[in-house]
Image (cartoon, rainbow, N blue to C red; front, side, top):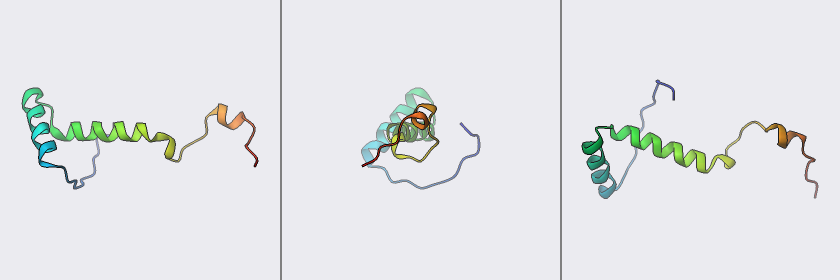
Length: 66
């Protein structure tokens, strides 16, 4: 992951905040790290909806014609 970070504001529920604080207290991992990990999980889950390069398999397969 890049060291440069962009500041942003998010809104979470009080329950999410409390649980993240407890997790931080027990692990000493900053809450921001858990939030970034969660964002990475969402991006990976929805990766198929993001623009990107075609893989070799996709570029070699016949195009679908209706």
